[in-house]
Image 1: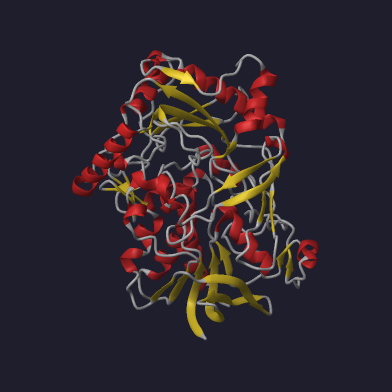
Image 2: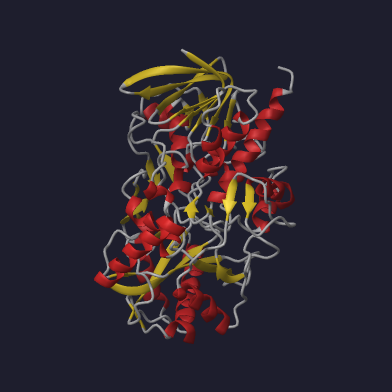
Length: 531
């Protein structure tokens, strides 16, 4: 039985940051456990290959049938392997709005206001624009301007400006509202996952053990303390012992799954699966929130966008050659190259819709092959009111959890999304985008609420930001306290998006890394507290 000071479960965004920060100074023996592989290959590193890795390094989860989506089953991709979802995502670097974190503090999460978390965002970041009041320049996570954005994406920003919508060149700066190009987690034209930033530079240190292709079966709890982890590797089970503690960072779906398989969760649900109850925690697996998203699409007569044609394929082949030589060109694309934030409902305390502009036609998360050229415009509800759950479908950790985001259960969500879709079409109708000769792929009477709602329910789905299933709070029902320690147990912390009490107004990769950074500091601080 091997022994470590700390075991970190999950090598994704939060886990990579937590493990890297705990191990980097060499004073602690740290083991990072990851169910997938190393994710150290050309397909992962080359941004433009993102559509070709959707069937690898991906759990490819699905939801239960969604009543709010007319009974459809939703798609829930999640990254598998070092880097987690930061190894397969669109690399968009967004932190969320100041209001989000101030609201967390108001909900009882002391120490999580915007002023509290900003130093950690800066600490994590190495922004090519340099250091200022909002950005860091010396962190492990490289953040860059896009090297070769598609002209269609530039036209989108121009189209928004033609509607007198504010242009914004830094969504993580003084204000979030506006439209522009996104910054991306890339370095020199390559994807820069959390693992490349935090794990790879120190993976050969003697105090740091990185175990890939290792599946966590359950936590070991002895007399109210988590003392180790049972893992499955190479067809056999073994225990790894943690002298000081375990950091769980398996994400919004797998963290509650591991807790429940370990006897930590809603007692009645655990009993239904024949699992002995170690700690009755109704909030484990509850409070699931995700950004519900509608993708409007237009076919174009112009061949400037990325296209599924022979000519487009030949252009991409040339772009691959250019990328291998110079790390520039179309293969540096993050696909979601441009976008923005705007307020569509008067009572919203901050922008309530986010847009992602893609210079290509997307259908069914890119899984449907579409011939020709075009562009797509995502609109997502930033702070949904609907709440869902994650539950066990089996006692086998290798089985997928039962995921129910409960999309559009609350009518306030579809009201926001309806207005977001209408603004998408207004932007597409502006001269800068009309110059590409677009034709709407899913025409609808935008003035007919019922028709628009039906179209949304027939086509909307996630934009890949599940959170909240191990929520943080000061109340007794919260899964973790504001130091990310699991309530009711010693030696266990959680460091991923599952701890968010409310979904942030934007992409969740950067906030997950910030959470991992903070967890490492909380764990270090606990070392100085007398037992």
